[in-house]
Length: 283
Image 1 (spheres, helix red, strand yellow):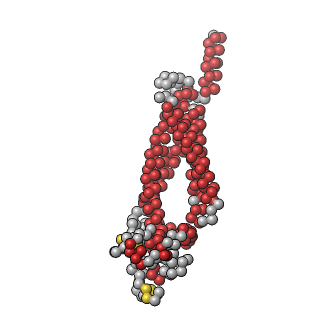
Image 2 (cartoon, one colour):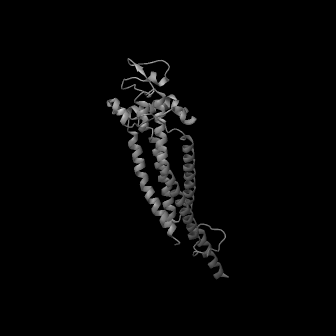
Image 3 (spheres, helix red, strand yellow):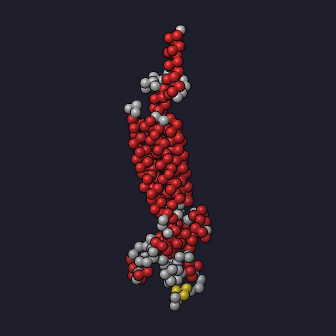
């Protein structure tokens, strides 16, 4: 039981060390992609991969070889990771509140309003540089390709994703005469065009659909975030035990029999003991 925590920490960090390799490889592969939405993932993927690599290496070395300094760095980094994950979760739930859309009467799909989302998300999506990248991602995904072949009966019987609902068609409340929107309608009705590269990509409903997709993805990811947080806390607790074992190993005393008040380096302890034995022999 004395070395159990060290062994567990060593094996777990070996697994996470190996898992960081495909993360970094995936980030380098993404860097070669020309799609705007995919290349934006390059920096965070690389950062996560290298952080996992360094932290796992420190934990593996510290636990297997009783290196106190490596375990101290490992525990400090793990504490920062736990705090960062908690902050990200809290921030994510705060900014992804609201939304959900409104059920359209007589239809299966929902429609989404930009005003239902948090101020931070609205400000973010309305900035030109962010919306340009998000719009390029939506167009590149070809989410509207299948919807373009739908018949009016399909709109009554089939469901739409948030992006398809907001970007591929005008709002259901819009009315058109000879292909032109009539007066006194919402702005999105005038933004709509049958052109495949225009559609409703410049509509507020399209921005709301993108935000709804972000909100839905975040809520799915939150389950994994909670599992990861519990896993990190458990690993941190085992790491504390391994750190205590490493310090006991330096003292060279059996478990439960550590009587020295200050633990120094192993070489200092052995040379000090040798010198005291020689001194006793002389006197």
